[in-house]
Length: 63
Length: 453
Image (cartoon, rainbow over all chains, first blue to last red):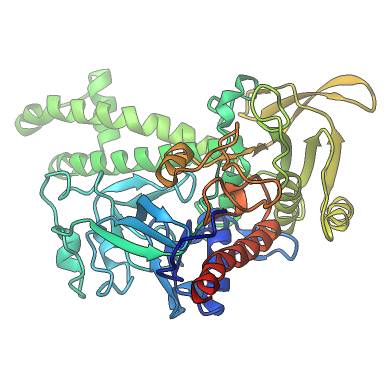
């Protein structure tokens, strides 16, 4: 990674995709105090996980 | 999911796509297009009144095509944000026809057919790519006849059947039976309409259509002048009525025998560990099949499942125990076999042809429903994403990473996690997502320190 001669303009972070991975990354960053833009292609977040009825191993509801 | 919508540090841009990423780590500018929903996000309360009156049905992809939604819709009931969206490809107004009934119905005044896309320029220090995956199209394996046999479905379709909010409300009805039921509903509608058309004749001439038709047929009809006038029309309408009623009665008789699916076959490695398609193991499908078999058994204790696989890969915390529990308590049989072919019998039942490797015999067995564990493939449009972000893909279409820093893509400051990285299950995706968050923080903080020094 190039590390010299660059200036930091912003600490905000862009997350692409609002499935389980994007949601988890966004929440972690937001809890650490970073501003996050979460971009999702579909009308709502949730991704494939939201289509699952229950999730392994506890058979809890995915939503 | 709810937390994401509420968190003050998260700006949620749903129904949006990245168009461009310029600059470098610590100093990127992301161009994001927020697509027009034709519904004002700050006004819509998500009540769904618009959806109820919308006259245009559209195939519902959230339910894997097994249900219909309207042209104005929410992706799914608990979706965040709860704002409805108008599908510009199907909405009557947006395709230049007359309608606008949703606009009249919306009490919040949220519907705006004039809404335009907005383009945002976001200054960001790092990017996390979590674009997920798409499942392998099983129709690429001709011997499984996914397109031809209604009762061969994918694991994701079956997931929707099991869901209480899904197309079958949690009951495992066979798709072929649901097709017949849809046909019955359609014919029922037609019969009801044609009966209405016959009503006037029956009232005017004091006999049922069946009596009239029989008398007309055997020549015993003594027509009055008025009846003579109506005769041809009545005959014509009644014959048309019979054309719908006869098949309707036959289908109704057939539907009496319909039961929910109780004998399930799960076929593993559909597209994965297959040198014709993806050589890799998709990782989550074995546990997914076991979970679906256990849930089916919970729904209905008479359910029996057979899982056909080369081996069951239960690698992970608590996985092997879950597999054994399924075998002991949920009527699951694990068969070591690679299914060669699926055909169907007279009752629309898929017949699985496989070699029983223990007995070294080729066997045939009919099931109510066959569920294909389709491989985890790269997301559709991965190529475009790679181009937009100027990053490399691996030979399968997942994003290329650095073996020493497994979440770093080929562009500094751009990280990847979840199934955009490679096939993985939910716990692994979650763990990787947290790691990617940490890497992104390092990227923006490290540079800040350097700037300070």
